[in-house]
Length: 239
Length: 336
Image 1: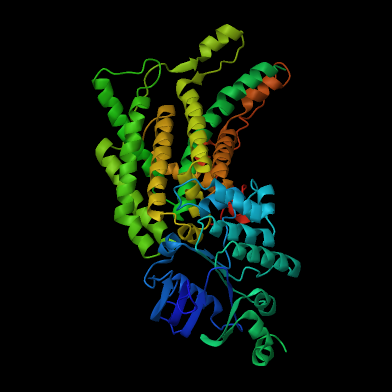
Image 2: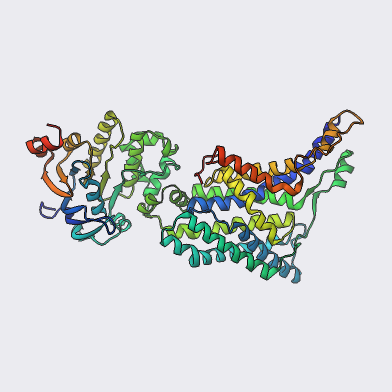
C-alpha cells in the first residue's frame, strides 16, 4: 500500500459514454486507506465522468482500474459492488418510497450474514437516521437524504467509498455537517473518493486533490498544496 | 317510513354485491398495478390472464367432480385453485421468456411493451376459447347461500329478503387473506422489499445487487396468483365466459388508475370505488325510496341513473375524470 501501488487507482483512463466522443484523456485518479481524495474542476471537466469510469459505468478504451492489486477494468458496476466498492450517485440515490431502515437494509442486500452491527454503526454515525428510521426516506430534508444515501452505500462494509457531489443542493450549514460526517467515515479507515463542486471547502478536508480540466489531470497534490497553488487559486478558486 | 326494510334492500342489492365485486376488481387491479410498478408497463393481457387461470381451475374442478371429490359446503374450485395458479404462473413466465424479456433487453419504451401485451392478449384470448369454448360455464357447487332470502324473511319477519351467497362471502374472505399475504410479503420479506426497491429506483436497486431477473420472476408468479384468484372468484360469483373477462379489463384498469398506478393500496381503494359507483349508479332506487317515503306513496320512475347495459360507461367516466384532474390517482401513484 505504498504510494506507487494505491489501494484503488484508475490509471491513464481514456473513454466516453457509449460510442460517443472521448471525455477522459489519460486521466489518473487514486486513493489510499484513511485518505479523502477529491476531484474538482470547472463545469464539464469530466469530474463525475472520471468517477463513473472508476466505477465501471463507461467503456474505457485505454487504461486500467485496480482495486487492492486486482485488475477490475472489465467488471460491471454490480460486480464492483460485490468486490467492495460503495458508490453514492449524485441524484436518485435513495429509495424514496421506502423507510430509512429499509433503505439501509437494501444497501446490505448482497450480504447474507447478520448486518445488525453495521446498522447500529450507521445509526451511531448518523444519529438523525435512527430517529427517522420508520419514516419514508423521500420525506426527509436534502441533507438527511444524503446521509441515507451514504449510509446505504456503507451497509455493504465497502473497502472504498465513492461519493458523487454529496453536497449538491444543500445549504452551506448542512454542507459543513456532511463534510464532518465524511471525515468521520474516513477515520474508520475507509478510503473516500469524492467529486465536489464546492472546491475550496472540499480541498480543505482533502488529503489528495485532483483538478481536472477537459478530461485531463491539470493539477494533482495534497489539498493544502492545491489551495496554496497560485495557478489553481486563480483559475478555480476565485483568487 | 320503514327504515329497516330500506336498509335491508340496500344491503341486498347494492352493498353486498358491490363489496364482492369490489374485492374481485381489487385483486385484478393489484395484478395490473404490480406489473406497472415493477415491470413498468400496462398489461392489457390481464383480463385474459384471469380467464386462463379460471379456465384451468374449471377444468381441474370438473376432473375432481369426475373423481367424486368435493369440498362439502364449499365450492370444489377452491381445491383446484392452486393448480390453476401454478399453470397460470408457468404461462406467465413462459410468455415473459418468449416475449417481454426480449423487449426488456432492448430497453424498449413502455408503449412498445403495452403493444406487445396487446398481442399476448389476443393469443391468450384464442387459447382460452379454443380449449373451453366461448359459452357460459358454471362450475359452482356446494352450499349456494350463507343466508337465503326466504330464511332471512322467516327469521326477521321483515318484508324484504336478504341473500348472502357463499360465493360472495368467499370472495370477501379470500380477498382479505390474499391482500394481507401480499402486503406482508412486500413489507416484511427480503424478496418483497427488493421488489419495492426495484419499483422505486431501478438503477439504485441494480447498484445494491438486487437481481432483476429474480424480481421479474417473482412478480409474474404473484400476478398469476392474484389474477387466477380474481378470475375464479368472479366466475363463482357470476359465471365464466371468456368475453366477460376481456370486458373486465376496463373496470380493472380504471380501478388501478383511479387508485394510483403502482400503488397497491390505491388499487384496492380504486376497486371498491369503481364497484360501488358502477352498482349504485345502475341500481333502481325506487324500492328503497318507497320504503323511506310516506305510507302508500311510491315514486313514479325507477330512480335509476343509468341502465345496467351502460355499466361500463361508469368506469369509463370515472377514468376520464381522474385522468383529467388527478392523473396520478387518489393515492399518489406514477402518472400514466
